[in-house]
Length: 297
Image 1 (tube, rainbow, N blue to C red):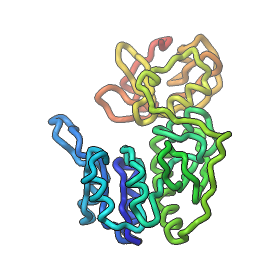
Image 2: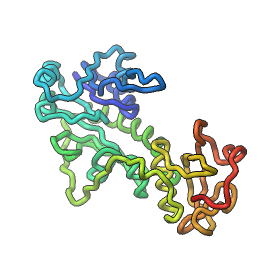
Image 3: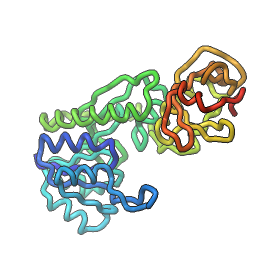
Image 4: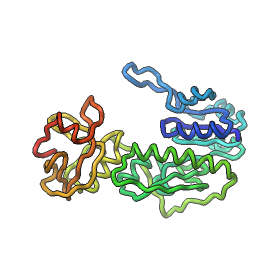
């Protein structure tokens, strides 16, 4: 098939690679290069960079408001467009341009967790499973009918970073299967199960030790590696990157043993953390150079 691919972050790259191996990718759309690094020089997105390595033409419009931009997209005469975490709103004229429309790969079991941060929110909510949906795009936010879905369990200490990578690989495999089987039955989403995965706010990242341990484990794992849940230790902001429930009790924030911390209810073990300017480390390693107070606040 003649495919237009539209994506921006690292999550989208395995899908681009799979499509390029099985179909004719006639164009790649990605968000424009952004300032990054110490020099704040414009850096292409992960999808943009990988597309260039694959020898694919790349388009980086700021938006699709201009008639010229929409006409350029329509002139590609694509059979289908595949959209994965692109980050731009597509007007109806763009959605209708490919002969078989636009398919979106969404990292949740729709209608649960429509929106910007479905992986983070699934872990933070304590969901037992999540998955990938291949959805036909409509003008609404993740409202279209679902063509294929695949569920996967969420591990007890799995982080957003790990689940992100796993779902990306599932999405790449699932979209190839979907294109091979087109046209597929399209199942409308059940309005009764709709939830929204609002964008992560950095204000959510500070750990409040008065909360139950189960909630804090989900917060720490769900915000790892970005933006990273954190607590203050000796005047230093330390990111907590992986946690697990543990036995124990004490005043909220009390250090019980090693990196075991009492919470409002129960306790948790910090399994991995990161000091300012340092790499992520297992708890045993980080404690060699970090003295914990009697109580964290």
